[in-house]
Length: 126
Image (cartoon, rainbow, N blue to C red; front, side, top):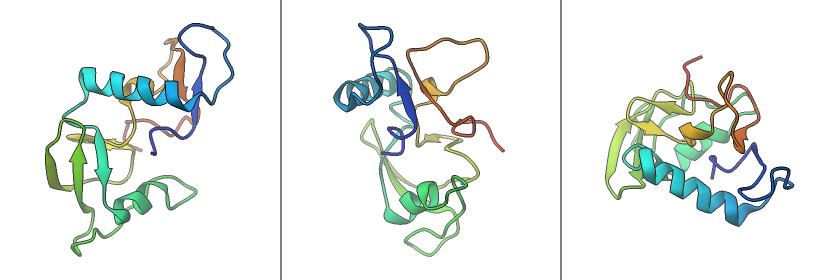
């Protein structure tokens, strides 16, 4: 669900459609990550990772996973595989994983109909 929050969306058909069309945003999220990130997009995650991603107003922060190891979590990816994985929680993405859609990260000079509004919601390390 973290991939849905802080999204500004102008729609596929109407250039200035009001943001908040959750069904269309959800369909677009799955379509976008299936094309390029199915093996790295975290679709299912344990509670401690959910807290690590959104439990702080300052963004992602390191936590201990359900199995007692620091920054190691059980995650399920969109392509169907699962891993017990070390995840550097200083950002929304890392090596082999992404909790947000990397295609929606706003980059200088790019124009997209959908993007994350906070500048720190990206896949770059801090």
